[in-house]
Amino acid sequence: MIQPRAVAPKSVRPAEAAALLGVCRDTVYVLMRSGRLRSIKAGRARLIPLAAIDEFLSADEEFAA
View 1 (tube, rainbow, N blue to C red):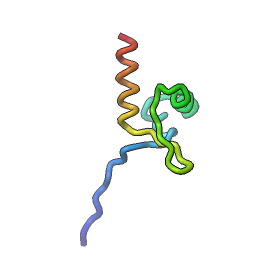
View 2: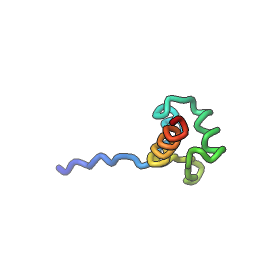
View 3: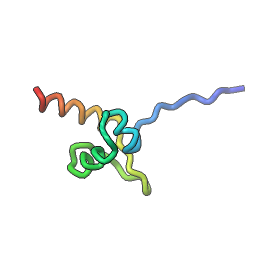
């Protein structure tokens, strides 16, 4: 029998993004509203591309330096 391949997600929901960033979910929504964290709307769901999380972290490192 053929085993299905596990596909790595390319985006996460705000609660998952909060866990990855180590902040609360409300902070993720504030970051999205301010434009500092890019997100997309898919139906009723708000999704944050993993690349957007990487961009946000890189921008914060540049800002702190």
